[in-house]
Length: 279
Image (cartoon, rainbow, N blue to C red; front, side, top):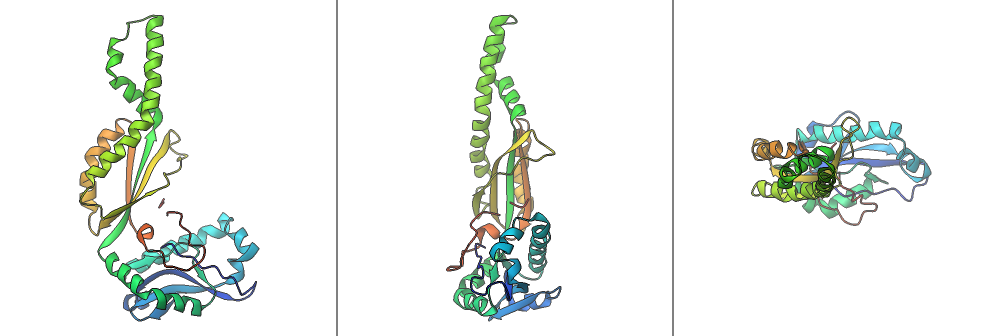
């Protein structure tokens, strides 16, 4: 969900309410514990806990959000709570860092947005988010395109003329590699027609230190019907094999909480519109 409310009026002292997600009231209560609480409004519950406001706001909060040692365990807990809650109820997930200055402010949001939250949770019972990433081994792609160029067979057998013409063809392959990787996205989209309910284009994956020869080309968030994993694999596998032969590698992962398809619950500050990667 695109929602974050940063406390603004309580100074350095006081306790805020950190919210992980919204869930069905009956199921949510069964999963409480581990320092969690629930603020309930009719059929929905905000899964939350109390946190010291000074750790999350002001200069201290800004410093903490840049400190991976402080940030890491809290981000992992955020995801773990949501994933555990998903076992009991469909959820509307909130992004990391959703903080209310008081329980009353959270209750106000619950009253104002209950209908939209409840409608999303009802849909989430039948839908789930998946990630589809494409990474390109540029050198392998260039070599594959060069080898497939019919002009290569017509090159002179040897000598300076062959060298100059071959270099020209290799430069053409370099220019064509990334263009080809972009064009394949239309082919993938056609292969997924009728299965994908909705999709979002996200920031491509960063370069993996373990595979430095690959660079991210695209990253999609896909909203699929629940239980569609086998059909997704059936549609992607033939394409994945042919694309990898030219250096484009696909990675489908999920299911995730539907962060990228949750509604923006209005009139809250700092709504954090950056898309979530699952890496």
